[in-house]
Length: 371
Image 1 (cartoon, one colour):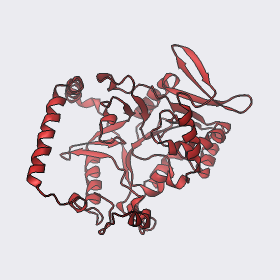
Image 2 (tube, helix red, strand yellow; image 1 turned 60 degrees about the vertical axis):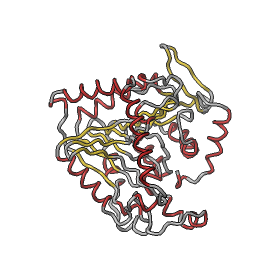
Image 3 (tube, rainbow, N blue to C red; image 1 turned 180 degrees about the vertical axis):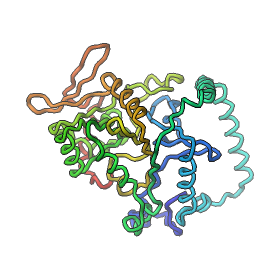
Image 4 (cartoon, rainbow, N blue to C red; image 1 turned 90 degrees about the vertical axis):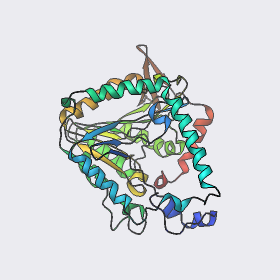
């Protein structure tokens, strides 16, 4: 585990005293195989992120990388692995009375789970898709200039976070400022500061089309984050920024292989596209936590064809998979979406219960710095 001090206190008093440290976390997502291939994105390792969970499904985008970037990813991993605050897992678990028996129990459970998974419809689909991807021609990969962007592990140490950290925000801001025609930003937890709102408004005034895609209240699995996002919707809309909120019943590829008809969809993709020039895919949410507290990573890909492809795929889905926000003639917030070629307009947070709306409003009191 990364980001733990050498002395841990398990009491509530210790937690409160050390909150400035434990409030930070490693949020990086990178997966490397034999230093030959890497997956970079924002996906966690859990059923709901792979379309397997029957009650919740998350929509993520990843990029599969080969070539020199894989060595860069491996080197980034080593920096965290060898950091002084990275300790063995044994430092945080109680000593077992009978480790051998516990090991055998865990192995038996894993063997049973693996056997059940092998016979599942989902597993069959995964095998077929994997073979399809492996057999594909080499030219199905796009060779492009890139910049791997990774926070320094020192960002997880409060005393070093400002003075000795290489920050992911520096290259990301530089990339965003390149926009001359269009910026598409996808962030599941979108909590812009006042300065961010001013920046987006300024971009719009300078002729840049700004499109924001985030979770609706119904789709958001972190209602407190909605409390930080909701107040900025009107100012952004008034400035001409376009906002789309993902529907709780939107499609997630792969979930059709399990009985997930009642599963709630949550956007989890962290991505942005600048004009038709470059795209970022990674773990960075557009919120103060990712900027100031978490360590993050991702890759900026400078390829016009790929960027345009990502942009068009998203734009094609917006009418039916999201709610478009707008202000009516009285300046009140409204939501619209399309089903079966018919447009519907909502006067309040769509697909939500009364209690969800209450909690969403109460969450506005949470400081943005903690979201």
